[in-house]
Length: 461
Figure 1 (cartoon, rainbow, N blue to C red):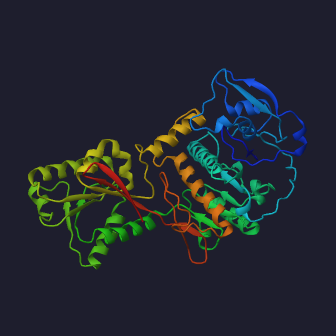
Figure 2: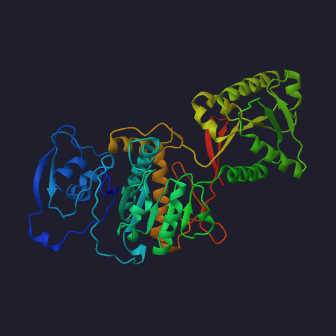
Figure 3: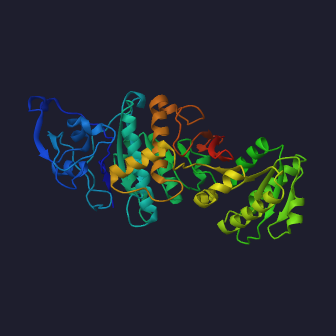
Protein backbone atom coordinates (compact mmCIF):
# COMPACT_ATOMS: atom_id res chain seq x y z
CA UNK A 1 0.00 0.00 0.00
CA UNK A 2 1.45 3.32 -0.99
CA UNK A 3 0.34 6.55 0.58
CA UNK A 4 1.76 9.97 -0.14
CA UNK A 5 0.44 12.78 2.01
CA UNK A 6 1.40 16.16 0.64
CA UNK A 7 -0.97 18.46 2.40
CA UNK A 8 -2.07 17.34 5.85
CA UNK A 9 -4.69 19.14 7.93
CA UNK A 10 -3.82 22.81 8.36
CA UNK A 11 -0.09 22.76 7.74
CA UNK A 12 1.82 21.76 4.63
CA UNK A 13 5.10 23.55 4.28
CA UNK A 14 5.23 22.56 0.59
CA UNK A 15 6.77 25.03 -1.83
CA UNK A 16 4.87 25.76 -5.00
CA UNK A 17 5.28 27.85 -8.16
CA UNK A 18 2.45 29.76 -9.80
CA UNK A 19 2.80 29.55 -13.58
CA UNK A 20 3.02 32.83 -15.45
CA UNK A 21 -0.06 31.83 -17.44
CA UNK A 22 -2.14 32.57 -14.38
CA UNK A 23 -0.93 36.16 -14.36
CA UNK A 24 -3.51 37.00 -17.02
CA UNK A 25 -6.40 35.65 -14.95
CA UNK A 26 -8.26 37.58 -12.25
CA UNK A 27 -6.41 37.61 -8.94
CA UNK A 28 -8.98 35.38 -7.22
CA UNK A 29 -11.35 32.78 -8.58
CA UNK A 30 -14.19 33.58 -6.16
CA UNK A 31 -15.12 34.32 -2.55
CA UNK A 32 -16.19 31.72 0.00
CA UNK A 33 -18.33 32.27 3.09
CA UNK A 34 -17.16 29.99 5.88
CA UNK A 35 -19.72 27.59 7.31
CA UNK A 36 -19.81 26.04 10.79
CA UNK A 37 -17.05 23.47 11.45
CA UNK A 38 -15.30 24.15 8.13
CA UNK A 39 -11.49 24.04 8.24
CA UNK A 40 -8.74 25.42 6.03
CA UNK A 41 -7.88 21.87 5.03
CA UNK A 42 -11.47 21.05 4.10
CA UNK A 43 -11.96 24.24 2.10
CA UNK A 44 -8.74 23.70 0.16
CA UNK A 45 -9.91 20.19 -0.77
CA UNK A 46 -13.36 21.49 -1.72
CA UNK A 47 -11.85 23.82 -4.32
CA UNK A 48 -9.02 21.55 -5.45
CA UNK A 49 -6.28 23.90 -4.25
CA UNK A 50 -3.43 23.48 -1.81
CA UNK A 51 -3.52 24.87 1.72
CA UNK A 52 -0.44 26.92 0.81
CA UNK A 53 -2.34 28.57 -2.05
CA UNK A 54 -5.33 29.30 0.18
CA UNK A 55 -3.17 30.88 2.89
CA UNK A 56 -1.22 32.92 0.32
CA UNK A 57 -4.54 34.35 -0.92
CA UNK A 58 -5.57 35.17 2.65
CA UNK A 59 -2.42 36.48 4.43
CA UNK A 60 -4.30 37.06 7.70
CA UNK A 61 -4.28 33.27 8.16
CA UNK A 62 -0.58 33.55 9.00
CA UNK A 63 -1.28 35.79 11.99
CA UNK A 64 -0.67 34.20 15.42
CA UNK A 65 -3.92 33.05 16.97
CA UNK A 66 -5.89 33.26 13.69
CA UNK A 67 -9.12 31.26 13.78
CA UNK A 68 -11.43 30.41 10.91
CA UNK A 69 -14.93 31.49 11.99
CA UNK A 70 -18.41 30.94 10.66
CA UNK A 71 -19.40 33.80 8.37
CA UNK A 72 -15.86 34.82 7.40
CA UNK A 73 -15.41 35.70 3.73
CA UNK A 74 -12.18 34.34 2.30
CA UNK A 75 -10.52 34.50 -1.11
CA UNK A 76 -10.37 31.35 -3.25
CA UNK A 77 -7.32 31.56 -5.55
CA UNK A 78 -6.74 29.94 -8.90
CA UNK A 79 -5.18 26.51 -8.61
CA UNK A 80 -1.63 25.74 -9.68
CA UNK A 81 -3.02 22.33 -10.70
CA UNK A 82 -1.37 20.45 -7.86
CA UNK A 83 -3.31 17.30 -6.92
CA UNK A 84 -4.69 16.85 -3.43
CA UNK A 85 -3.83 13.65 -1.54
CA UNK A 86 -6.12 11.70 0.79
CA UNK A 87 -5.94 12.23 4.55
CA UNK A 88 -3.52 10.12 6.54
CA UNK A 89 -6.20 7.99 8.17
CA UNK A 90 -7.77 7.15 4.81
CA UNK A 91 -4.94 5.50 2.82
CA UNK A 92 -5.63 4.29 -0.69
CA UNK A 93 -4.29 1.22 -2.44
CA UNK A 94 -3.24 1.06 -6.06
CA UNK A 95 -1.75 -1.66 -8.21
CA UNK A 96 -0.54 0.85 -10.80
CA UNK A 97 3.05 2.03 -10.92
CA UNK A 98 3.47 5.71 -10.01
CA UNK A 99 3.96 8.13 -12.86
CA UNK A 100 7.63 9.05 -13.10
CA UNK A 101 8.09 12.66 -12.01
CA UNK A 102 10.38 15.18 -13.60
CA UNK A 103 13.71 14.50 -11.86
CA UNK A 104 14.98 17.43 -9.81
CA UNK A 105 18.71 17.85 -9.40
CA UNK A 106 20.07 17.96 -5.86
CA UNK A 107 21.61 21.40 -5.97
CA UNK A 108 22.96 22.95 -2.77
CA UNK A 109 20.14 22.62 -0.25
CA UNK A 110 21.16 25.95 1.28
CA UNK A 111 19.95 27.70 -1.88
CA UNK A 112 16.49 26.12 -2.19
CA UNK A 113 13.69 24.35 -0.35
CA UNK A 114 14.62 21.34 1.79
CA UNK A 115 13.05 18.15 0.44
CA UNK A 116 11.90 16.04 3.38
CA UNK A 117 10.54 12.51 3.29
CA UNK A 118 8.70 11.07 6.29
CA UNK A 119 8.57 7.28 6.52
CA UNK A 120 6.73 6.50 9.74
CA UNK A 121 3.50 4.69 10.66
CA UNK A 122 1.04 7.55 10.17
CA UNK A 123 -2.34 6.07 11.02
CA UNK A 124 -4.84 5.71 13.86
CA UNK A 125 -4.93 1.92 14.04
CA UNK A 126 -2.70 1.47 17.09
CA UNK A 127 -0.46 3.30 19.53
CA UNK A 128 2.53 3.41 17.18
CA UNK A 129 0.52 5.14 14.48
CA UNK A 130 -1.16 7.60 16.83
CA UNK A 131 2.13 8.59 18.43
CA UNK A 132 3.88 9.05 15.10
CA UNK A 133 0.92 10.95 13.71
CA UNK A 134 1.24 13.40 16.60
CA UNK A 135 5.00 13.59 16.08
CA UNK A 136 4.44 14.38 12.39
CA UNK A 137 1.95 17.10 13.22
CA UNK A 138 4.53 18.74 15.46
CA UNK A 139 7.07 18.42 12.66
CA UNK A 140 4.72 20.27 10.33
CA UNK A 141 4.15 23.00 12.89
CA UNK A 142 7.90 23.61 13.00
CA UNK A 143 8.00 23.81 9.20
CA UNK A 144 5.35 26.49 9.40
CA UNK A 145 7.44 28.45 11.92
CA UNK A 146 10.61 27.99 9.87
CA UNK A 147 8.90 29.43 6.81
CA UNK A 148 8.66 32.74 8.66
CA UNK A 149 12.46 32.56 9.01
CA UNK A 150 12.95 32.10 5.29
CA UNK A 151 13.39 28.32 5.36
CA UNK A 152 11.05 26.54 2.96
CA UNK A 153 10.37 22.82 2.89
CA UNK A 154 8.89 20.35 0.43
CA UNK A 155 7.45 17.46 2.44
CA UNK A 156 6.27 14.05 1.31
CA UNK A 157 5.05 11.46 3.80
CA UNK A 158 4.42 7.75 3.47
CA UNK A 159 2.39 5.65 5.91
CA UNK A 160 5.03 2.99 6.66
CA UNK A 161 3.24 0.63 9.05
CA UNK A 162 4.96 -2.24 10.84
CA UNK A 163 3.60 -4.96 8.54
CA UNK A 164 4.55 -3.23 5.29
CA UNK A 165 7.64 -3.64 3.12
CA UNK A 166 9.57 -0.37 3.19
CA UNK A 167 11.05 -1.21 -0.21
CA UNK A 168 7.61 -0.49 -1.69
CA UNK A 169 7.96 3.12 -0.61
CA UNK A 170 11.61 3.37 -1.60
CA UNK A 171 10.58 2.41 -5.14
CA UNK A 172 8.60 5.64 -5.37
CA UNK A 173 10.70 7.99 -7.57
CA UNK A 174 9.86 10.86 -5.19
CA UNK A 175 11.79 9.16 -2.39
CA UNK A 176 15.10 9.48 -4.26
CA UNK A 177 14.64 13.24 -4.53
CA UNK A 178 14.67 13.76 -0.75
CA UNK A 179 17.51 15.51 1.05
CA UNK A 180 16.57 13.84 4.32
CA UNK A 181 14.19 11.05 5.32
CA UNK A 182 12.65 10.91 8.80
CA UNK A 183 12.28 7.32 9.98
CA UNK A 184 11.89 4.45 10.23
CA UNK A 185 10.26 3.41 13.50
CA UNK A 186 11.11 -0.30 13.20
CA UNK A 187 14.61 -1.79 13.35
CA UNK A 188 14.00 -4.24 10.51
CA UNK A 189 13.55 -1.30 8.12
CA UNK A 190 16.86 0.44 8.90
CA UNK A 191 19.08 -1.64 6.62
CA UNK A 192 17.11 -1.16 3.37
CA UNK A 193 16.58 2.54 4.13
CA UNK A 194 20.27 3.00 4.98
CA UNK A 195 21.33 1.33 1.71
CA UNK A 196 18.89 3.53 -0.20
CA UNK A 197 20.28 6.63 1.51
CA UNK A 198 23.84 5.69 0.56
CA UNK A 199 22.87 5.14 -3.07
CA UNK A 200 21.13 8.50 -3.36
CA UNK A 201 23.12 10.72 -1.00
CA UNK A 202 20.26 11.18 1.48
CA UNK A 203 20.49 11.77 5.22
CA UNK A 204 18.34 9.51 7.40
CA UNK A 205 17.14 10.99 10.70
CA UNK A 206 15.98 8.16 13.01
CA UNK A 207 13.84 9.83 15.71
CA UNK A 208 12.97 6.98 18.10
CA UNK A 209 14.11 3.69 19.60
CA UNK A 210 16.07 1.66 17.08
CA UNK A 211 18.62 -1.09 17.55
CA UNK A 212 20.63 -1.53 14.38
CA UNK A 213 24.24 -2.21 13.45
CA UNK A 214 23.90 0.28 10.59
CA UNK A 215 24.69 3.30 12.78
CA UNK A 216 28.21 1.89 13.16
CA UNK A 217 28.88 1.65 9.41
CA UNK A 218 26.65 4.12 7.58
CA UNK A 219 27.66 7.79 7.64
CA UNK A 220 24.27 8.93 6.34
CA UNK A 221 22.42 8.01 9.54
CA UNK A 222 21.55 10.34 12.42
CA UNK A 223 20.14 8.40 15.39
CA UNK A 224 18.40 10.30 18.17
CA UNK A 225 17.76 7.39 20.53
CA UNK A 226 20.40 6.45 23.10
CA UNK A 227 20.29 2.91 24.54
CA UNK A 228 19.83 2.80 28.31
CA UNK A 229 23.36 1.51 28.85
CA UNK A 230 24.78 4.59 27.11
CA UNK A 231 22.48 6.90 29.04
CA UNK A 232 23.64 5.30 32.30
CA UNK A 233 27.30 5.85 31.44
CA UNK A 234 26.68 9.48 30.51
CA UNK A 235 24.71 10.14 33.70
CA UNK A 236 27.37 8.48 35.87
CA UNK A 237 30.08 10.59 34.19
CA UNK A 238 28.23 13.79 35.01
CA UNK A 239 27.27 12.63 38.49
CA UNK A 240 30.97 12.17 39.25
CA UNK A 241 31.72 15.57 37.77
CA UNK A 242 29.05 17.49 39.66
CA UNK A 243 28.59 15.58 42.92
CA UNK A 244 32.03 14.24 43.78
CA UNK A 245 32.06 16.35 46.98
CA UNK A 246 28.80 14.88 48.30
CA UNK A 247 28.17 11.88 50.55
CA UNK A 248 26.21 9.31 48.49
CA UNK A 249 23.56 7.27 50.32
CA UNK A 250 22.02 4.32 48.43
CA UNK A 251 18.60 3.19 49.66
CA UNK A 252 17.55 -0.39 48.94
CA UNK A 253 13.78 -0.15 48.38
CA UNK A 254 13.17 -3.92 48.26
CA UNK A 255 11.76 -3.74 44.72
CA UNK A 256 12.43 -7.15 43.21
CA UNK A 257 11.23 -5.98 39.78
CA UNK A 258 13.61 -3.01 39.54
CA UNK A 259 16.10 -2.67 36.69
CA UNK A 260 17.83 0.31 38.30
CA UNK A 261 20.46 -1.90 39.92
CA UNK A 262 22.44 -1.69 36.67
CA UNK A 263 22.79 2.05 37.22
CA UNK A 264 23.44 1.95 40.97
CA UNK A 265 25.99 -0.84 40.60
CA UNK A 266 27.85 1.13 37.92
CA UNK A 267 27.80 4.28 40.03
CA UNK A 268 29.07 2.46 43.13
CA UNK A 269 31.96 0.95 41.15
CA UNK A 270 32.89 4.41 39.86
CA UNK A 271 32.76 5.89 43.37
CA UNK A 272 34.98 3.11 44.67
CA UNK A 273 37.44 3.73 41.85
CA UNK A 274 37.73 7.36 42.95
CA UNK A 275 38.00 6.44 46.63
CA UNK A 276 34.70 8.18 47.49
CA UNK A 277 32.97 6.71 50.55
CA UNK A 278 29.27 5.90 50.30
CA UNK A 279 26.67 4.20 52.48
CA UNK A 280 23.94 1.65 51.79
CA UNK A 281 20.78 1.54 53.88
CA UNK A 282 17.34 -0.04 53.56
CA UNK A 283 13.84 1.39 53.42
CA UNK A 284 12.89 -0.98 56.24
CA UNK A 285 15.78 0.08 58.47
CA UNK A 286 15.03 1.53 61.90
CA UNK A 287 15.16 5.32 62.22
CA UNK A 288 18.43 5.10 64.14
CA UNK A 289 20.09 2.82 61.60
CA UNK A 290 18.77 4.95 58.74
CA UNK A 291 20.19 8.12 60.31
CA UNK A 292 23.64 6.56 60.73
CA UNK A 293 24.01 6.30 56.96
CA UNK A 294 23.91 10.07 56.59
CA UNK A 295 26.77 12.53 57.02
CA UNK A 296 26.22 15.39 59.52
CA UNK A 297 28.80 17.62 57.79
CA UNK A 298 28.48 16.99 54.02
CA UNK A 299 25.60 17.23 51.61
CA UNK A 300 23.99 13.78 51.37
CA UNK A 301 23.05 12.65 47.86
CA UNK A 302 20.33 10.00 48.13
CA UNK A 303 19.98 7.42 45.34
CA UNK A 304 17.16 4.84 45.30
CA UNK A 305 17.43 1.53 43.46
CA UNK A 306 13.93 1.80 41.98
CA UNK A 307 11.93 4.11 39.76
CA UNK A 308 8.48 2.96 40.91
CA UNK A 309 5.94 5.31 42.45
CA UNK A 310 5.09 3.13 45.46
CA UNK A 311 8.69 2.89 46.66
CA UNK A 312 9.32 6.56 45.89
CA UNK A 313 6.39 7.50 48.16
CA UNK A 314 7.80 5.35 50.95
CA UNK A 315 11.30 6.77 50.54
CA UNK A 316 10.05 10.36 50.59
CA UNK A 317 8.07 9.60 53.76
CA UNK A 318 11.22 8.16 55.34
CA UNK A 319 13.27 11.20 54.35
CA UNK A 320 10.60 13.60 55.66
CA UNK A 321 10.71 11.79 59.00
CA UNK A 322 14.49 12.05 59.06
CA UNK A 323 14.33 15.76 58.24
CA UNK A 324 11.94 16.36 61.15
CA UNK A 325 14.24 14.55 63.60
CA UNK A 326 17.46 16.00 62.20
CA UNK A 327 16.78 19.34 60.47
CA UNK A 328 20.51 20.05 60.35
CA UNK A 329 21.09 17.38 57.68
CA UNK A 330 21.71 18.51 54.10
CA UNK A 331 19.78 16.15 51.85
CA UNK A 332 19.49 16.06 48.06
CA UNK A 333 17.89 13.30 46.00
CA UNK A 334 19.09 11.92 42.68
CA UNK A 335 16.32 10.28 40.67
CA UNK A 336 15.32 8.71 37.37
CA UNK A 337 13.51 9.83 34.21
CA UNK A 338 10.51 7.71 35.30
CA UNK A 339 9.93 10.13 38.17
CA UNK A 340 8.74 12.82 35.77
CA UNK A 341 5.51 10.85 35.57
CA UNK A 342 4.97 11.49 39.28
CA UNK A 343 5.73 15.22 39.30
CA UNK A 344 2.14 16.19 39.95
CA UNK A 345 2.13 14.29 43.25
CA UNK A 346 5.79 14.62 44.22
CA UNK A 347 6.54 18.22 43.26
CA UNK A 348 6.69 19.48 46.87
CA UNK A 349 9.07 16.67 47.82
CA UNK A 350 11.20 17.31 44.75
CA UNK A 351 11.59 20.94 45.78
CA UNK A 352 12.13 20.14 49.44
CA UNK A 353 14.89 17.64 48.76
CA UNK A 354 16.75 19.58 46.05
CA UNK A 355 16.06 16.81 43.53
CA UNK A 356 18.01 16.12 40.35
CA UNK A 357 16.40 13.99 37.62
CA UNK A 358 18.53 12.90 34.63
CA UNK A 359 16.70 12.63 31.31
CA UNK A 360 17.08 13.06 27.54
CA UNK A 361 14.19 15.57 27.59
CA UNK A 362 12.20 17.81 29.89
CA UNK A 363 8.59 18.84 29.39
CA UNK A 364 7.86 21.89 31.52
CA UNK A 365 4.09 22.11 31.17
CA UNK A 366 4.05 25.48 32.95
CA UNK A 367 6.49 27.23 30.62
CA UNK A 368 5.07 29.87 28.23
CA UNK A 369 6.72 28.13 25.25
CA UNK A 370 5.07 24.80 26.07
CA UNK A 371 1.71 26.43 26.68
CA UNK A 372 1.89 28.25 23.34
CA UNK A 373 2.75 25.20 21.29
CA UNK A 374 0.06 23.11 23.00
CA UNK A 375 -2.49 25.85 22.31
CA UNK A 376 -1.38 26.11 18.69
CA UNK A 377 -1.63 22.32 18.32
CA UNK A 378 -5.20 22.39 19.66
CA UNK A 379 -6.11 25.20 17.29
CA UNK A 380 -4.56 23.49 14.26
CA UNK A 381 -5.81 19.96 14.84
CA UNK A 382 -8.91 20.42 17.01
CA UNK A 383 -7.64 18.09 19.73
CA UNK A 384 -5.14 18.07 22.57
CA UNK A 385 -1.76 16.37 22.53
CA UNK A 386 -1.68 12.93 24.07
CA UNK A 387 -0.82 12.83 27.76
CA UNK A 388 2.63 11.34 27.46
CA UNK A 389 6.21 12.09 28.41
CA UNK A 390 7.71 13.29 26.23
CA UNK A 391 4.97 15.04 24.29
CA UNK A 392 5.35 13.61 20.80
CA UNK A 393 4.23 16.72 18.94
CA UNK A 394 6.79 18.84 20.80
CA UNK A 395 9.44 16.23 20.05
CA UNK A 396 8.57 16.52 16.35
CA UNK A 397 8.71 20.30 16.59
CA UNK A 398 12.15 20.29 18.23
CA UNK A 399 13.52 17.69 15.82
CA UNK A 400 12.31 19.57 12.76
CA UNK A 401 13.57 22.95 13.93
CA UNK A 402 17.00 21.56 14.79
CA UNK A 403 17.42 19.42 11.69
CA UNK A 404 15.99 21.73 9.04
CA UNK A 405 17.66 24.84 10.35
CA UNK A 406 20.94 22.93 10.41
CA UNK A 407 20.53 21.75 6.82
CA UNK A 408 19.63 25.28 5.76
CA UNK A 409 22.77 26.66 7.42
CA UNK A 410 25.33 23.95 6.55
CA UNK A 411 23.84 21.87 3.76
CA UNK A 412 25.28 18.37 3.39
CA UNK A 413 28.02 19.23 5.90
CA UNK A 414 25.55 19.48 8.79
CA UNK A 415 26.52 17.00 11.51
CA UNK A 416 24.34 18.22 14.38
CA UNK A 417 27.31 18.93 16.62
CA UNK A 418 26.89 20.92 19.82
CA UNK A 419 26.40 24.62 19.10
CA UNK A 420 26.00 24.30 15.32
CA UNK A 421 22.36 25.38 15.19
CA UNK A 422 21.89 27.59 18.24
CA UNK A 423 18.32 26.39 18.75
CA UNK A 424 16.95 26.38 22.30
CA UNK A 425 14.63 23.35 22.48
CA UNK A 426 11.19 23.49 24.03
CA UNK A 427 11.56 19.93 25.29
CA UNK A 428 14.15 17.80 23.51
CA UNK A 429 17.81 18.88 23.28
CA UNK A 430 20.02 17.39 20.60
CA UNK A 431 23.69 17.22 19.83
CA UNK A 432 25.27 14.52 17.73
CA UNK A 433 28.68 12.88 17.64
CA UNK A 434 30.23 10.69 14.95
CA UNK A 435 30.47 6.99 15.88
CA UNK A 436 33.86 5.96 14.46
CA UNK A 437 33.48 5.90 10.68
CA UNK A 438 29.75 5.32 10.95
CA UNK A 439 26.79 7.58 11.50
CA UNK A 440 25.93 10.27 14.03
CA UNK A 441 24.38 9.51 17.39
CA UNK A 442 22.65 11.92 19.74
CA UNK A 443 24.57 12.35 23.00
CA UNK A 444 22.45 15.01 24.67
CA UNK A 445 21.26 14.54 28.25
CA UNK A 446 20.21 16.92 30.98
CA UNK A 447 19.55 17.20 34.70
CA UNK A 448 16.20 18.64 35.73
CA UNK A 449 16.95 20.37 39.03
CA UNK A 450 14.09 21.13 41.43
CA UNK A 451 15.49 23.83 43.71
CA UNK A 452 14.29 24.42 47.29
CA UNK A 453 13.46 27.99 46.21
CA UNK A 454 10.57 26.35 44.32
CA UNK A 455 11.71 26.78 40.78
CA UNK A 456 13.22 24.41 38.23
CA UNK A 457 16.37 24.66 36.14
CA UNK A 458 17.65 22.48 33.32
CA UNK A 459 21.33 21.65 33.21
CA UNK A 460 22.33 20.46 29.73
CA UNK A 461 25.33 18.26 29.06
